[in-house]
Length: 528
Image 1 (cartoon, rainbow, N blue to C red):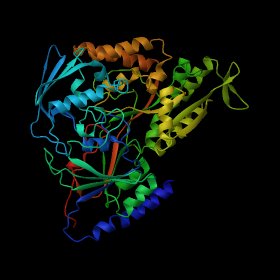
Image 2: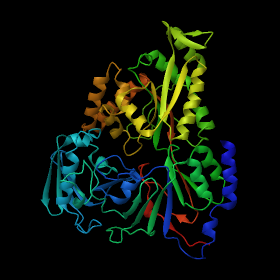
Image 3: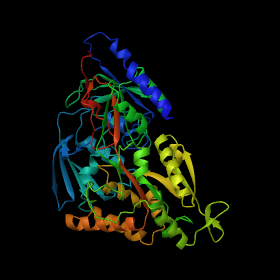
Image 4: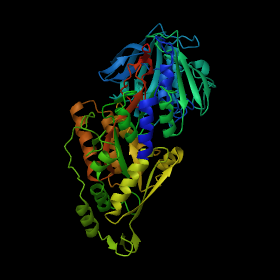
């Protein structure tokens, strides 16, 4: 594998962008070619089947999340009243959908009503459960009324889905939950053409209310194979690779490309938490002592150095201390093979010298770890953990599954261990922990064996409506201390988004969310 990567790297350093270099001098490219392993699929902003980066290109929100806090977007201002339970938004008066429909309070209400008709599907997001009514005050004033003073309201309204706005001309029977007739938004891009599992073509919205994009077209090419993406980069056929968690480019390839003067690379700040989720209701892993041993058996530093090429930082807790409400001092559970062995010995799991697998009451210590088969990095990390656990007498079976099967397994809880990645800011921690109460999420299923699961869910609910920041911080500390003590997660590292791009592409950067790509800020300089 590494030999193949080195070969590709050598080719890239000598041949990359030959096609670009053959263009007429001083000609400015007007089409950006982006490569992804995934098709955009159904980008209905009120559902979850589409690629979030594509949804973000077409559909917009009332407000946006930035590193400097919440900023106006389709709403130019807002007022909070009624002890934090009423939000009144003043809408921009110069916005139209790309089909010519005026963006006004009636359209906003229609979109909210459509979203709320699918409350069960959106229940992972607590804001959905808090909304009791919506109201049109006048043509450009919209009112949102809540049951409680819900502190993440604006943050969740700004997320990529579901609170984005689609033209009501696209609705089916005044709804969106069963699909839409078209994908028309107010955003900087218009989806012009889509050939499933091949490409999607986005063109500039020339009637966009905000700053128009400098690039005229974005071609989203679907290239399922990671090596094929690198070869396309080598040939100058693509301009941009952008992804988190190794789903677009793994750390080995990224490290090699960093050394090239033919491409540019960027790494985001640590943005999400990479971990292994341990199911507390399964026959073997319901035993806290087994979970403790697993914590000490995984060599995180070796994973970061050998697999992630030191591109990520070690995670001693589920969330980084830089995540809001997560600057908490918790005991560090260091890699310690001898301690892991002692814990299992004391718990009655004894090594069978013929098989080198531990046994207890006639039961072998065999576990199964599931990961997304389309992610090479997840496979490599899983293989390394398999080796770690073998050293302490645990037979770990690792099973790669297609993404949908992997997600189905999260929902039914049929796993011992499962690869996990948190959602990152702005979802962490509030929206991520909110999902711990949703039956369809792996975290919920994995926590069902905890003695205090009912307390945990109630405390999360209390956090989200606690108006006193100090009390809220104390509640966060309680739940994170409990989860840490119960060893529900083996934190590995804090992940970062990787970008590789054509050197003539400028203003390549990151949004707050790892799921969005700021195409609208990018432009090409004149080729030299």
